[in-house]
Structures are given as C-alpha cells and as structure tokens.
Image (tube, rainbow, N blue to C red):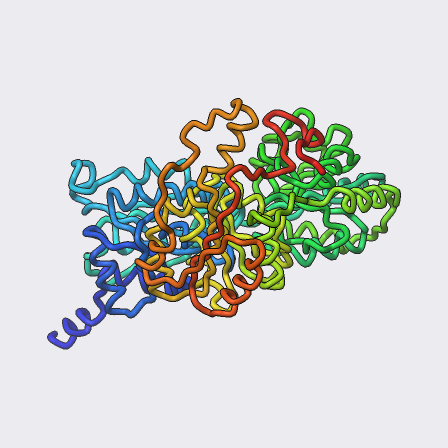
Length: 567
C-alpha cells in the first residue's frame, strides 16, 4: 500500500508544470514575459525547469517582442503576463497581432477560480476584453484540461489566417496538483484549418489572366505567412507578370527585380500606383485592400477584372468586390498556377511602359551638403548590410522612408506594424527579432516619438547585448502627424513638435548601451561603417530636418493615380 502511495505522489504535477510540459511539446523554447502575483506558480516552475524566458520591462513590450519573433520565424511567439494590469497592458500587442495576422499565444494570469467575479485584487475580465482582438480565447477551469487547451491554442494561432490567442490561467489552476490529464488531441469540430482548393475557380481565374493585356499581381503579407515567396517569384518571372507589394509584402520580391514595381498605396511608387490604376487584370494574393493601399475603394483599379486569393473568406469582397474570389492558402494557389500550361500572352508594350516609368520616377529626395537626410541614412545602412539585415521599424515617417529606400531582398525581412500602426512597437519587436535570428544583424529604424513610448526596453537590449543597431531618426517632431497638419490643417502644428526631449545619448549611457550621434552628411558613411563593424547593441542617433516630408503621397480619399510630390 505504501509503495502505491509513493508511486502516486511521484506522478503528481502542478498545473504550472503541466503547462510548461505542454509548451515543450509545441516546440516552444523561448518566451517573453513579466511576473506578478497571479503567475508566481508559473515563474517558480520556469525557475525549476530552467525554461528560457526573457524578462522585458513592460507587458506591452513582451507582446511586441513575441510578435517580432513570430514575424521572423513564422512560429508562434509566447508570452506570460500576470492578471489585471498585466493582462490589460498586453491588449495593444494583441490588437496589433490581430491586425497583422501574427501568430502569438499569450498566457494571462488570473485570480483563483473561487474569486472570479468578486472584483478581487488585480482581477480583470480578460475573456470579454480580449475577444475582439484575438482569434480565440480560453479560461482554464480544470488543470486536467491544460494539455488540450494549449494544443488547441497553438493550432488556432498558426493555421488558416494566423493570429493571437489568449489563455487565461487562474492561479488556483496553476497551483493544483493532478495525477491524471485529458489527452491533448485537438477537437475543434467547427474549426476548419484546411480546405480543398477550388480548382474550377482557379481555372476560371487563370483563363481570364491569360486573356489580359495589362495584368498586375498585388502581393500582400499572406505570401510571407504562407512561405510562398519562391513560388511568387517563379510565377512572376515565368509568365512575365509585374508585381506590386503592400507594406507587409515587401521582401517577397527583391527590390532590384525588374518585374517588381515597388510598394503601392499612400506612399508607394508612381509606377506601382499607376499600374494599379491602369491594369485590366489584378491578381491580389494575401492582401486585404486596406485603406492605405486602396485609398479610394470606389475608384480602385477601375478598368480591371479583380481576382482575390486569401486564406480568410471574410476578406473577400469586404472592401473591393472581386470578380474571382478564391479562398486558398497563397502557397497552394501559386503551386497550382505554376502547374498549369501558361505563357506570357499579354502585350509587351505594357511591360515596356512600366519599365520606362520605373526609370523616370524612382523614389527620390533633395540631397544636402549641410543637413543629414533620413533617406540617405537608410540607403547607407542598406549598403552596409548588403540588403540582408532583419529590418524592424516603429511607426511614422521613418517607417515609410525605410519601406521606400531599404533594398529588401528576402521574405519576412521587414518587421513592422502595418494594420494598427502602433508607435512603440519597434524596439521590443527588434528584441524579439534578434532572439529569432541571432546570426543576422537586426536594424531598427525608429523615431524620437516612438522610441519614448517603449524606451524602457533599451535595458533588455543592453542586458542581453543583442546585435541590434537602433537608428534613431530624430526630427524633434511627431513627423507623420506634423506632415498631415502641414498639408491639410494649414500648418497648425498642434502638439506635434517636442519642446523638450531627453538627451538620448545620456539615456543610452544610463542603460549601459554603446551609443553614437551623427550629424554631418560628410562623415556619416564612415561613422556608420565603424558602428556596424561592431557585433554589439548600439543606439545611433541621427539628427534629421524637422520638416522633411514623405513623398510621394496620396491625400485622404484620393485615388491611387492622384499622387502629390512625384518627381
């Protein structure tokens, strides 16, 4: 009898241990988080099981770091935060991940099961709050269900249209001892992760494409999510189809590819936007026609038959009506296209026109011998990194300049906040990207406004001495908002010019970071070369003109062919 009791005790596990075991089964070897009372059992288990976890300085930073990790690797980023304010601080990152279809699983602490609904200390209704900004959420009431719920959470986050999932963990569940667990088989009867390709719809679409004279492919973030960049490049090259990218589609076609027309939309190239306007067949793959791309939906691609391929059926027809709506994974659809007999049948004068426009209207800026232009800084970094760095941005003017002037060469290379436009995303996302790609230099382009939103994460950068070069493009303003005020509000710069800022070099020194300030266009190239020869983290501040504009630009409500600032 005593022998049986001892054996039973050996088999007992706490809910926290069960959770970490389930995470290992999902091949999770790294997570980001911040401890608190409700997750003390989890952090105790992390300590005992020697599970690699990165201590950030704010819960929002934890989620953005997980996003950066997920965007680079395609694997779900994992986060632990505590209850109450820990969970609410994670909300911005969840909304950002939902908007950009980024797979993350966030485990939020919760008060004990018996205290739920009593307004206990640090209690928050996580399920209600996170429902609109997650693919799914769970609250674990029995530790025995943990293996199944974890398996379901990862399945939901990573299949179909990827996105964030929340698992709410009452403290009593993580403390509870169990000897028997439910199996971890996923039983989602209403969740269809994969669906067969509609070959008849694909054939009909390809027939129309063959008959087009002015075809264009619009490549979105779904290409990279499906790991379909190779297929996109081959399809474009084999059938001589020009390609326009959304912001999140940059890198799926190399910048120097002759058939690549550049980014489309509000700050896209003249050639890309004119192609979107004048094409007679538009094949959109993995993009959702957001308002920064389809700036005037009723006037978008007015002469084109439109085919829209997307993994999410809810996106088809939501903004732009499609003549050929097809629900499909981008890779599966492109593989099918490549297997079909097809030849470049469209008029070669279309490609010649696009080539001429590319040569005549590249991105440009007014060079200066006295002022350090942000575009030049980005171009120099592009050359120093041979177009192969993992590039992270925050949000604002610098984000658009980076999209315009960095020479992207590979998929999942640009890590940025697209749909939500979250200032403060850049620094923690760069940390996540650095953990994901320790063999590559990570470059973060950030503005002075965005850096101050999550600047506490500089401490993480210093603590782990990650090879991240932070390029702070400092114009002393909230540049993009100020640009809109100048263009559309008669230069009433309400609260967009900083009258006071920290000394960023002293801030870097306080965190123990290497730092460099560049101000001269004469010496900047040599200074950057020395900085990038170091394998250490560094904050590089570049003072740029306060009133530098991002052009071209499409004014709100105007169509893609109505660009201002075109050279």
